[in-house]
Length: 424
Image (cartoon, rainbow, N blue to C red; front, side, top):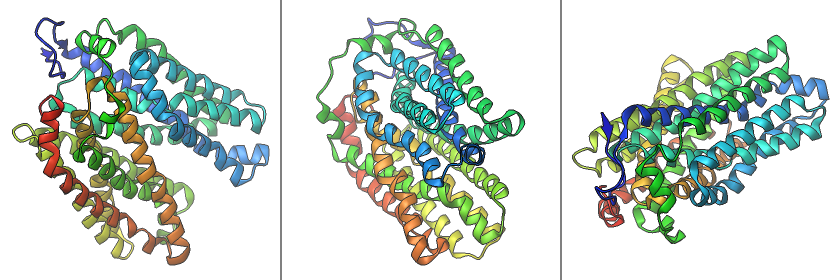
């Protein structure tokens, strides 16, 4: 069976539809590299205690080793994605993966803090645009009516990669030392980076590859044209404000309110992170299924996910510690991440295909500036004044705001998607 092209403005004289097996192979390899991306990024957290002891580092210096990666991703996502849209997405992905993998190997070989800092800087440079360009490649080989599923599933790779990086990194470091933890992550990335261009060749991608190479580049104004598109950026960011705050502070919440030690609190938080990852996938699948007849339903569902996460998180946080509280928080995190799929589909359907890498970079930027960066910070600042339990109540408020933004987008989505040149 073959997939019809997701590009609505291509004519019948172009290449044949892509085979199903090849499309899913592209997804699997691109998804695998995203997991490698986050494993290389998060393995550092698992070896913090060992680095602190061996090099006598302060917590501030340790935090900087993690923060430099996020800083480079934030600063370089947009320009590198724009460059990839013009230079070639497949070539760009391979170069990025090779860079972050070699930089992670450099972490394993670092002899002092300064060398480790430089290596982590390069990890951030390599990872900066991978997520946005990777999802653009994936969407280019699948039908339009799978975009919410694929967007959610692809973004969930970051969640799974983070859990794997910390879990495997910690296990390897405990057995053979922290250097081998970095080396194992580097080897995984290098193997995938070597295989990727042998399988995912533009010539084999047929119409999608030809389109990406030959299309005229629309003005950057297309990245912000339309109220529904701007609302998709804002709504996605607000939902990740809630999800990001919960993910970062949940180990501390379990430690303070449930009396769990650091190891058990981290394991409990990892389960909730996996719930968020499952929400990205399953809510995206539901959005695509429900939107087959009425495409605007994906926007309605994004709003519904925001409302559900607000109610569940708020109800859970108002309860005393116990199984019911954790169950409600887990369900709330499931839906808090659920809007990622439909929001990604909205961005893809409301922007030109040749600009998808840059469009998803803009979405990534919004997710970080509106959600993932301020969410943990504001929650922590409120926790200093009110206590963490009360500070967490800002998360359901952000989800409620996201629901309102998506409801606003619903008024304009269908007409703007059709005006863009394809099905909504």
